[in-house]
Image (cartoon, rainbow, N blue to C red; front, side, top):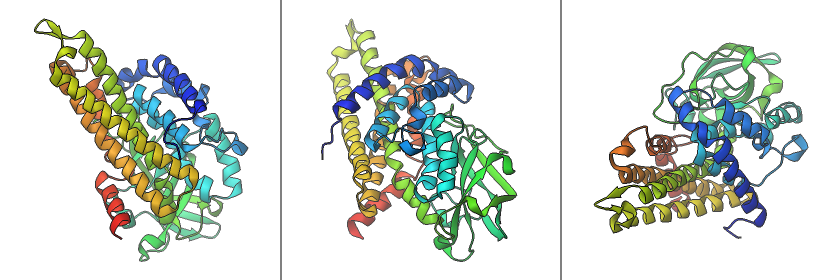
Length: 380
């Protein structure tokens, strides 16, 4: 297996690099400042066909491999981490449908996602059930040909923006993880969005609460079998966490690029600060760690493409996500340090990179949880 990119993937990266510089990066500071959905950037991504990248060809997509998807995630995050999330969140919401849903659900929703007409959100976490998914309290009770859903989900990306929501709820109380089921719920069936989070980073990507009070969902919109929800959730995260690693790599690369430019322009003691060995070594360390993270992300993505067994895939996805996000936090913090006082102001983008990097250590499973997964793989 090669850990490098194919000629086609390199060409895609080059085209995407120019696209991001022209259509995405110039808007990043505005959407961060205004805490508003990055509409212009998202629409440009739709026009570029990026919302269809991961969707199978039979449903109107491009059917790209995971490494190509990682290249996309990295380049978008390099320009605007919030835009990267808003483009990629629908994949997280739709992977359960693609891998466990009925033919009717796939034919109905995947083409709409591919075209950018609608977006999807993934609703797993609750106020007291983040890392401890089995502790969720949301309920789904069968009533004839429908289920009645009651509860709420927290920290949901695109809450209120997406048209469809993949919601996990308990159908068999007392059965723990084996009592959770999965449902595809339309926004217009009675979902409410009472709270929008005021966040440290990713401020252009809306995050909020999704509440459902006796919302009726057709049984045809259950994804998989009853009690299969926890397995669906973990299967999905194993196949998406490496994308978070790619986002982290993109944020780190943006910080490196900014630091390179600044070191050539900023002068101190009569010389460009790029002449000072201590700062040169800082930049070298930033680049080495980022390149290592990129390679591990590609390895994890290749494992998805090659159909590695779930246990090995869980290990690689966890390792890629945890390592790359830790690198992003380290690299962006060093970038702020390199900029000195300027790095602590909004006049330069490195403070935004540092704020955006933090969430990659938290969402889709904290890095502490990832280390549990890694240690379990190694020790049993």
